[in-house]
Image 1 (spheres, rainbow over the protein chains, first blue to last red):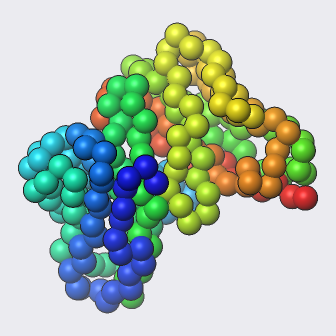
Image 2: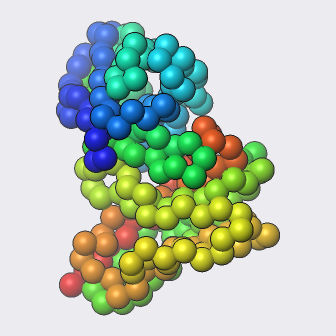
Length: 112
Length: 111
């Protein structure tokens, strides 16, 4: 997956608990993204980062926060998980004009 | 409203046959269009990137076409293989950090 590692790969948690997903990249990409993928929907952007400590909201950012303290790491936090946040979460990096966007293998999150 | 529509939603073909997947978009202004392949349980992987001035691009047995006037693209797969079974996602970019994803076409290649 082009040097992008997501952890954990699978997570089951209970409603109301905080959850943090981690994305690590080894190719020094400036841009990093968190998406969620649900049946019947295209990938939807949660948050993205355009540099260390520079982040912005995507189209479905409610209930999520992110942090990027180092170029290689981008964390996604669900402050208080809800069942509607059950999804597959993908991290991506790259994506500047003409540049490929590289994806991690995804994290399957189930909120019970 | 910026949208990307793909058809069909799903497709079953026999190994060795050709197929064509469609992508229509309303995203404007247009920068580039990408096709991705997503195997089950994996992240999407880039197949092609096409800019406004390109109307055909090939990657092995995959050939993408783009008609920027009608805002349509297609992905043609030649001599399909079992390993082509996957979801194919069309992505359109109006600028460098905004990606509009289609819902994908799920292709099943049967022996």
